[in-house]
Amino acid sequence: MEGMMGGVSYQRFPKVKLRELKDDYAKFELYDTDASMANALRRVMIAEVPTVAIDLVEIEVNSSVLNDEFIAHRLGLIPLSSDRAMSMRFSRDCDSCDGDGQCEFCSVEFHLRAKCIGDHTLDVTSKDLISSDHTVVPVDYSSDSFSNDPSDHRGIIIVKLRKGQELRLRAIARKGIGKDHAKWSPAATVTFMYEPDIHINEELMETLTLEEKVSWVESSPTKVFDIDPNTEQQMQLPASVFTSLVKLDDTNYLVWKGQVMAAIIAAGFEDFISGSSSPPAQFLDSGDLLMNPDYKIWHRTDKAVMSLLFSALTSETLGQVVCCKTASEVWLTLKNRFESVSPSRVMNLKVQMQQLRKDGKTMQQYLSTLKNLVEQLAAIGEPVEHCSLMSH
Ligand SMILES: [Zn+2]
Image 1 (tube, rainbow, N blue to C red):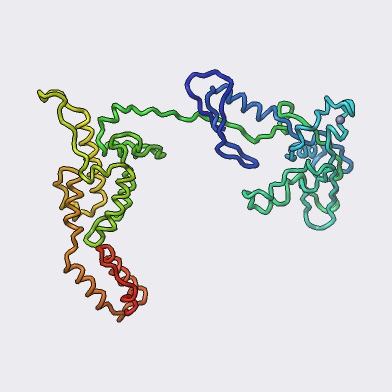
Image 2 (cartoon, protein in one colour; image 1 turned 180 degrees about the vertical axis):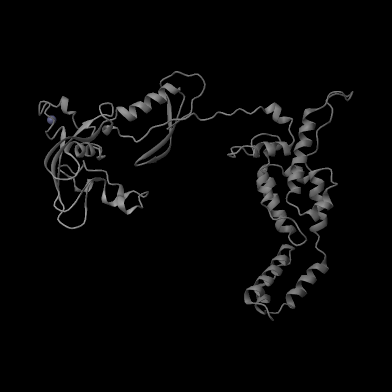
């Protein structure tokens, strides 16, 4: 159980949000309340939810190594399916049998008969318990996905018998609660923890450079932070997207541009690339005394877009744009440098393709070289027709 407690609240109308629910496991958020509520729930789950468990054992024959009390105690601890527990009566309140606790409304009868006749040790398990009610049976763990151990498929071991030893008994299961005895507790364990509520000092964060913010994000050992996409600041850009892009080189400009453009648009910064976003006035007054905060923000964002563009360049390409003043200047420089494909380059690639021979290459080497040339031509706007490939 997980609790998320908001502020000082003592109201008794908490909200529950399920995060995980399996047959034998539940995890949920509890909020709009305080720890006492979570603890009350925890205690009810452990001690006050009724289940069915073996409560009376009559031993007919027991020649095993364990004494009667020991076996009775082990039987009591075997978990039984308890879907019927809510409709069953507590035996002490039962009118039908005057509290005897052995009628159909307040009890379920089990029988166990086992005798070892072979030379091998016989394991007597919960699967040997024969129930008089098919809805109340020992819990079968073998159908659970987590049980890969073949020993689980035999049920829970009660006692081991050697040749000639015998166990014969009748047991009565009754409804009860964990408060009376732990065998009736429906939960193995119930815990809760506080969900951390983190407040970031935005003003202080403003004063950090992008590098400082990145190192701050990375300082968290469990990686709970990322560069925030919801603020208007440079925190917004998802830096990880850019570092995973194909880096720009002489051959892949159009592919590179497509990827970077998509990431820039996704982050909402296309205006900084196209140059249509121009910086606001530097000063608020005519006397050049009051600095315009928007001016500072604009430049900081522009620098962040620039540094992200840089992160998608190889070091050689970076050398050609490192003197640029703005992100749009970087973008334009790269466009001028790479977009206009010289006719000689197209010719060069086409000649390479025509002269490509299989010769000593394996088929795979040959095809991957060919594919590479075709892709380069396609990327510079000279797609190769399918039929011209066929001639190879
Ligand atoms: Zn009864």
